[in-house]
Length: 394
Image 1 (cartoon, rainbow, N blue to C red):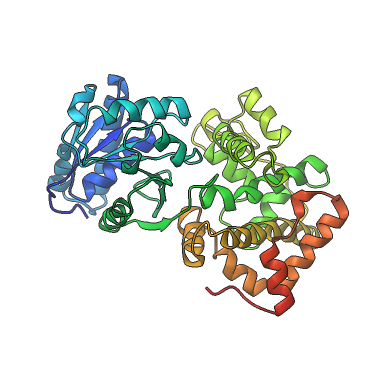
Image 2: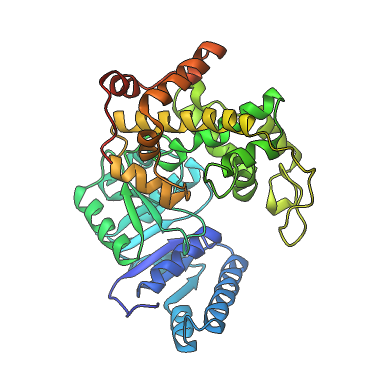
């Protein structure tokens, strides 16, 4: 439901899918929104896409035509950066490139009042490093929305090392008013979701590289334990270029920790232009309507499925344990992030409790022994908890 008008003007930089989605969220919360892009066609496309959304909502009786018109009227689209001057919050949603974002924020810093909060929607770049390029770094914060922003409940609030604590509180208030579930994440590579989710993709790719199981079998194994989509289905939906870029960024930022090593399979798909649904070819082939072209029927082997899912799940639980150990976020926020941000069937810490901490440790130690790689090293927290028979407090 579209809310009443507020006194705040929110600015969004970048009229792509993410920027347009964030603009819709802010406008639905009652804000006046300025949507800026250097390309007129991007702004036109944004208006057209929102009209389609509004028409669907009206046809289903969820909105009145007046509400739809008011929503569209709250968003002022412009190619003039000067129109951002009166905003209390500016959120950038441009290309995931450090230099491009840094340059933008330096321009914004000289344009908007000192009281204006600057926010980046980066999914993997260092907020602290971006703030470090500014004269007043305390005004910058990360607000990481998930695509599509109007539908996905989660927002990761990521303070830079320099961010004023009052800005964190203000952003929490806004996100609640925008009907979002917000979590506070330490400014470390991948924040919460893109860090904890790496084994879901990375270990699935490793299993596929080994050649014993098909991508269909791997996907089915993860769906069988409650995931809505298998890792290859999800990578095709996200876009292999996007997923690979995030993996490379996290790998580099963690000083080439083998736990986050990118896959040659995914690089080859990116090089071939097989990016997933958006190119009609990824790990699967798609029709123009997005439906998967028929694939060979798989022979279901429950034991093989369990081996696959146990391997991936043990690494996911391990990643969550290590994030908790390193104070990346609270246990509660780690759970919310994975259930609201990537629709996991349950939080990974709760899953670890149900699975058994000692069981998870046993699986990891077996993998480490088999492969002899640091990739499978158990978190010290898991070892500590297994030794004492403890569980995560969730």
